Amino acid sequence: MSIPSPVPGGTWSLGDKSVTRFGYGAMQLAGPWVMGPPEDHDEAIAVLRSAVEAGITHIDTAETYGPRVVNELIREALHPYPDQLLIATKAGGRRDAQGGWPPARTPDEIRAQVADNLETLGVDRLDLVHLRLGDASGPVEEDIADAFGALVDLQKEGVVRHLGVSNVTAAQVAQAQSIAPIVSVQNMYNLANRADDALIDRLAAQGVAYIPFFPLGGFTPLQAGALDTVARRSGTTPMSVALAWLLLRSPNILLIPGTSSRAHLRENIAGAGLELSEEDLSELDRIAG
Image (cartoon, rainbow, N blue to C red; front, side, top):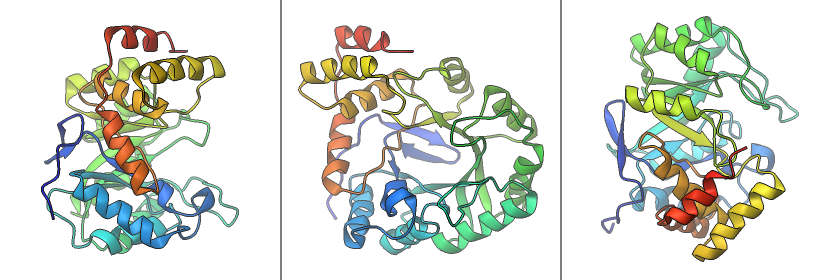
């Protein structure tokens, strides 16, 4: 295997591992609506191997993707895992027969999901588990003590190394931190949806990673048009601009863009290294809703 070129953004200490700030989100490897097997099994395996060969050391997944399918693809493609690779997964929900994402947050349900992740990934201990909260529309104010406490117990038992939270309010982040240390928060955030600005800055000061999802999600036509203008001026794509901006936003931001194509993976890696001018940054800052 050739020595990979550095991926954009450098590294961040996620728990006891230094990971690339540019990571890979594996959700899109499953079939339509994140259900069932991939349309091209061999390409899915090749994408995962190409991500690691490119130097990426942070892969995001969940047992609910498929369900089971994506974790099993990761195991097939990459097990035994390189020492430097960190695989982050989630607990707090399940899939139903209609493809929905109902919550599953009782202590017994959390334990069952961790057990499923251990089995499908083929490991004795999970690197990082995010407690997934809220619903498809975003965070919901709810007490997290029992669900997060179940993960803390599993951490004490040695089957989970590090803890994080996902789809959460700032108050829920604070509640989790009052129970046990977390290394990461995973929420929707991008150029147009910046409600977590203050939270990102607070977490950066604490050394806690912030992992945004949906880098192009929730844009109005007007906002998308402004992003397109910057992309055209730079001779690149809106996704490249959005990813590059996120890396510049704060050093604790870790990216997990997903794709089921090696070509798109290469485009995302190259695009995230885009240099944005002061004019670009000023124009992009006006996109925020």
